[in-house]
Length: 296
Image (cartoon, rainbow, N blue to C red; front, side):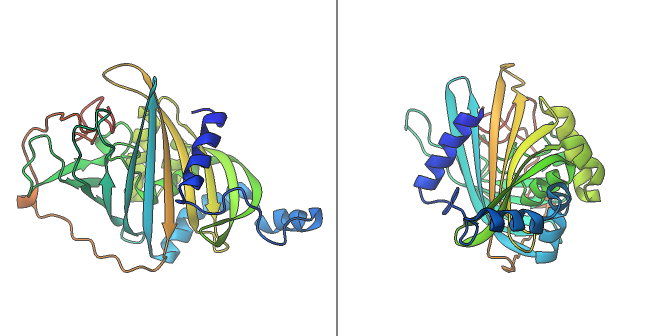
């Protein structure tokens, strides 16, 4: 997705009311002197972004909203999710809503996803999976490290990508849903992120560094005054394994209501489906089989 497309998507999101205040300078930053002082107070952008994941661990937990936009050829789809996440235990729960079929002939049931260190659990997967069973996927076995396969990027994994920040620019202050934030734009490297990631996330990020078309990830990050991510938009690119066509993915993560209680219980072994998962065309992940990602 080029910059012009990105700006059009940002305008659409803002118009829908999902995000407030994008592109609006915070009060008191209009003068050149105030702007210069704010740049000074922001510190080194690269170092600040390297610490963003640690700031989330310090916060403990939050609510999360996700949006994943995929474009290949003339087709564009958006998958949305919402839920909660515990950054210290690296456990989360998201409800992911798939887009309607182009014909509008059918609707997909929301998929419940449980995020855990090294694993992704999905319920209401469809494709022949019994309604009372979960699908379990080893994230390190996925060529994208589960940054896009589940239709939502694990919030802590998204933050750990910033550990690989190579270059970053501070663009000034704005607001996200009424919260003052600092806006940074830069590029992260997945190989570097894997080297500095937590032990739980290292293997998944290393897999992503090998599996994507490029290990470089352009991003826009919005951090509050405590260094916590409020919004993070990352752009990934991979080659579809079946069609051999380039696919652009823009993943947006929104974090809010820090300190929200999070109670995530992982499925028992008896509740996990052990059979083969068929491709059902719903656009959901298919247990990590090559070439099957959301929307394809």
